[in-house]
Amino acid sequence: QVQLVESGGGLVQPGGSLRLSCSASGFTFSSYTMGWFRQAPGKEREFVAAIEWNGIVTVYTDSVKGRFTISRDNAKNTVSLQMISLKPEDMAVYYCAAKRMWVGAPQAETAYDYWGQGTQVTVSS
Image 1 (cartoon, one colour):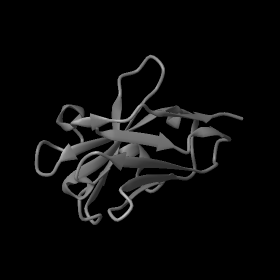
Image 2 (cartoon, rainbow, N blue to C red):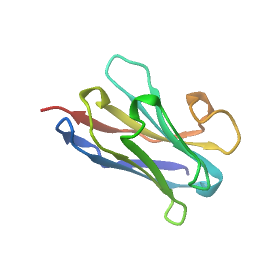
Image 3 (spheres, helix red, strand yellow):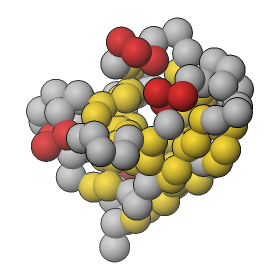
Image 4 (cartoon, rainbow, N blue to C red):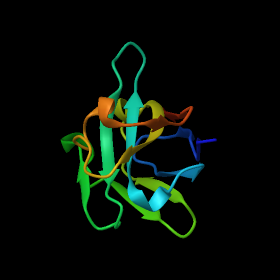
């Protein structure tokens, strides 16, 4: 049974930091591209960041470049998203997702096979 379980969300002040983690099971983690998406109230879910199987190739949406860092540990089947300098517009439910390597663009939501339940990130003073 495939599972993606996110953790690390919470309330943070503008300018603060959070680290999200996603624990994966039930599939060959090292063969999958891992991504983070987010959905703010009243908005569509959007791509945030992705990391290829080797942990070397990463891609970010422009609005988070320089502030967010995605990483993975294939030995522990985890993917993380370190977020710094958080802004109110970063507030959303953040989802971890997995897609097969070389299938679809990492930014494409429809390319992903598995999804977590999401973790809430609230940025407010």
